Image 1: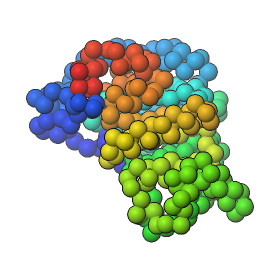
Image 2: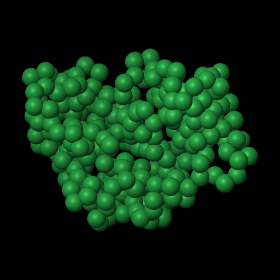
Image 3: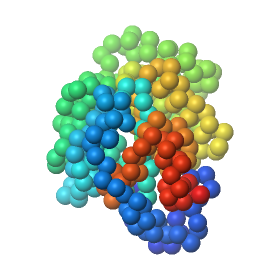
Image 4: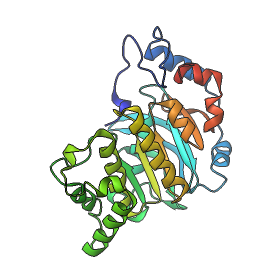
Amino acid sequence: MGEDKKPDAPSRAAGYGEGGIAPAMSVGDVAREAEALGVQVSRDEIVALAGGAPLLDLQGLHAGYGAMEILHGVDLAVGAGQSLCIVGPNGAGKSTVLHSIFGFTNITSGKVVAGARDVTGLSPSDKLRHAKIAYILQDNSIFPDMTVEENLLMGGYLLNDRRATRAATEKVLAQYDRLAKRRRERAGVLSGGERRLLEISRALIMDPDVLLVDEPSIGLEPRMIDMVFEILADLRDSHGKTIVMVEQNAKRGLEFADIGYVMVAGRVALAARGKDLLENPQVGRLFLGG
């Protein structure tokens, strides 16, 4: 379901930033050197980065798939209206963090707390309905044979009131003219960037407080990446949404994020303000093409 299940490539690593990393460096080399970066990140430091009062708070999370544990005691904290970007080598557990927050993994210990409420055991539907957490999947989650409007209406599947769903859909279409102009067209004919916009917009129908965004730039050309990050910035800055993101384009993700984490081998190896991680020369060499 995410990059965390894929084995390390045996030869060369794809770039994590806009310029890629040195071509002679394998994914395994990146992982080993990244692990050497790690210092013990205290829970106090994690909470302080969230302003001391997290809206979303992971506490010592151990989780995985079936009997396989991927996360080994992960702490994460992000405040209301903040953005957090997780970067790291393939297999680090980045997408598993999002999966665990939303209820797609087997959590063996630790907690997921949202708005001071323990939501660890809630189903994905209840996370969306009651905890106001929405998950924007990595790619290709639209219904291509449905119209843009019908895709948006599907975002309100948990609402029992058709009029409320219709009103929420119209509100989103009023916000994004690019979709409004194509509301009657099949979603399958949209460009990659427009599909990503539709995926984000559909998640807004339930008016979530927290958006979990998995690889927003994947498969997009540069100008569409710009559009997607502008939309996410507006949702954070103008609408107060809290955003937790996994992003393979580490430079772009950390430029966007208030908080940055580097994950290695199922643990948080580094945590700092996004701009501080951008300026870290070791992080730059491993993930930013520097």
